[in-house]
Structure formats: structure tokens, C-alpha cells
Length: 297
Image (cartoon, rainbow, N blue to C red):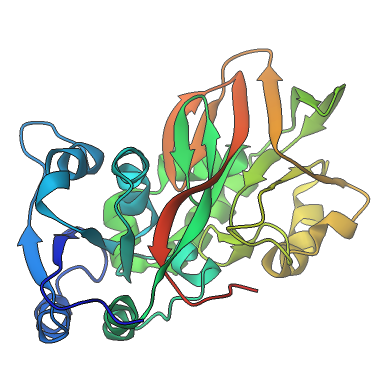
């Protein structure tokens, strides 16, 4: 079902996104030709994207955001609070959420999708009150997020992830964590704990091969490898989402899990460090609507 002519869309493109400036004019022309009236807005005075959405909620019928996963993450609370449907323009480095829900990498095709589809409900994850679209993690990938600068991502793209990851891998160490879920408590030694809502994350990794963003579950995994070379052996499975089959990977599905550590550790949500352990993860089922194909299987 196409969008009715005259609808007003809050139009936000992150100018710092890797592909933020290249397609903006053509995207705008496509959306306006499809009958949308675009309302431009930018954060002002220390505002977040969520604040902008909340402030503009009475002036628009939907929100269109161009950027990467970090840009979407900063808008999540505003989208939940207002109930406005979201159109995604994949203009970032990895665009993992767009991949998860079946949005094509071409931003012009994504714009046409917004004009031609009905928004559908999508789950979000939450940790310590911070929402996430894809994955929240503790350990190796949180360290990666802290060292991979915006400048490096914009210049090197996915190659930047690999360069920094290789450097971190050489000095990584296991840490102890206590995992509470479904009535049990487990003590583990791990390199990384990840809790996923969607299927893809980290510029090409897969949380779990069957995961979707609307299945009402969180996918937990812990990398309990004791040598860096073992992680290299795991990489093909991490990309395909089959790592749960390995003996040194702990994996399960749940709707709520708490991870505690002896000293506070940073938690990475969709590529940004937003909170610390102890980390209380829970599922927020079908809390936003997104213009996307009918199935993301």
C-alpha cells in the first residue's frame, strides 16, 4: 500500500554518515515525487535525535532517517515514545539493521520502499534503559567500538573494523562474568558476551542464522575461547550465525538476561558505548513500526 499524497515526513540525514551527502538530493526528489512533504530538522542545543522527534511529533506523520546503525540508535527512544513509523535510508558504514529487515543497500531503492510499503512492527532490545536495534555486547566488541573512531569508519568503511579488530585480538584476555537468566545463574570466562535483537551486526557478523527483528526473543552468545587463533577459526561461523554449534560458544534464546562482572565493563549498543555492567537486558516486543518488506526471513 503506497503512502497517501500529502503526508508529512520528518526528514533527517546524518551529514557525518559515510554516504550521507552523496545521494541526498536524489533521495529528496524521489520522496517528494512520491507525494511526501519533507520537513527538515536537526538537533539544536545539545538535543538528541530522539528529542527532535518528540519535539516535532505534531508536525509530521512519519520519520525518515538517513545514516547508519548509530544514527538509528539515537532516534530509538523518540520513535517508541511518539509511535511514528520509521523509514530507513541506509547511508552508514555497515547498515546492519537495514540488512536484517530486508532493506536494499541502494538508498534510492530504500526511498521507493518507504513510498510503496506499509510499516510493520519490529522488536527492540533494551539494556539498562538503553534501546538497541541490533546487538549489545560486553568485551571484545565494546573495546572495538571505543577504538574505532568516526573518522576511521568514514575513511576505511568495513576495512576499518578489520584493522582495529586485528590489533585488539592480539592483546585480548578472558574476563569473568555471571549470567542470570530463566531462573539460573552461570559463572563464565569469556572474551565477549553478546545479546542480539536482530540478525546482523558489526559490519558483517550474524547473531544467529535464524534470528529476525520481530521474533520476540533475544539471542545470547558468549565466546569462551582461550586463544586468539581459536577465534580466527570461529570467524566463518560468526559471519554465518552458526557459532552456537561450537563447544566453546555458549548460546541460548531468552527474553531477559542479567550480566554482572567483578568491575564495571562498558556495554556497546549498535556500535556506541552507552552503559556499564551490571547489564540488565530485556526484550521490547513490537515497540516501533518500520517501512520494510513483509518478511525478513
